[in-house]
Image 1 (tube, rainbow, N blue to C red):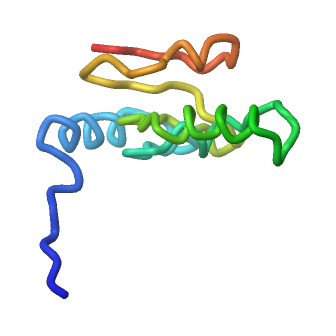
Image 2 (image 1 turned 135 degrees about the vertical axis):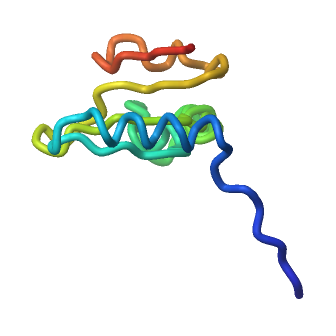
Length: 100
């Protein structure tokens, strides 16, 4: 089998990551291309149909840029140059969503 390496991060997001790295305090880290399921976990009982339905929904959402506070060990902000599908799932999480 042969595979081709695809563009992991485009030029626009590369510039944004570099700007953020240069300007954020040392206790913050910028992640790129994180699935929402890495941040949120369904509250439904594990193993139920509701759990798997909720998990599939959050797992289908990819967050372009996530600013993570290493001291508090939690995401602080999500930045996207496009509309984030199902961004409403983040309501009530105290995570700032910035769609530019």
